[in-house]
Length: 305
Image (cartoon, helix red, strand yellow):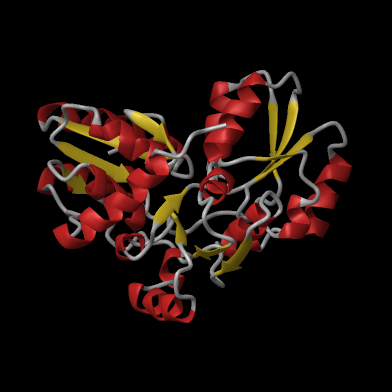
């Protein structure tokens, strides 16, 4: 079947099975184009919880499907390719976090949503790349915070708080590979373009940014900005969405090699198969789910700026 036929088949199966297709901003363009909802992992799961759909098909990676299971326990959550994971999420385990907590008694744990459900369950509160600073500053009673698993997000947050942040030595290999030298080269070729960097980037890359934004933040900023050219410092999948939403603007990848291989594992045919077989199912064990949800809900109660 060609792309159009597969897309049509997916939309038909979604309707027949009372299912909803959630698609992360880094997914393949032909999948983004037929999504019920596109966005970041947490935002998608929150919106999915409000729907009447019985089945969630999450076109993303494993921790994202887990987040949907955490927030939507009454729905069946499908991850079309079970091996679609996240290298950064794999850099921490609940056992290693428990050991670290023993070294830092009384220090609250802030875990990025890009982490396994079992790690969220060991955490006091979660954060996203958009609200990490607000979450940390909301912990008014504490001078020291343990932040996991992304060291670059922690180092970015450290710039905006007086608290001491002890950080986990995890990182996104695709954001971490972007160098200041590479950014300078692209900026030199496009001197009128604004550089938007994701907070998962290295500090020296953040230093060059005109704006530091999450994926949703980049989409919102580009839509509202008067500027016509942007250099995008995150996974290249988002550029399809940016160009679709802003056909009159130019978007240049900071590095064309910033391609997450796990994010690209899912194809249209995998979604068809998942809907036919209603598998693979991602289901977070209830004891873990309840504790992880508490950490997520504490985050959701933090006031936004």
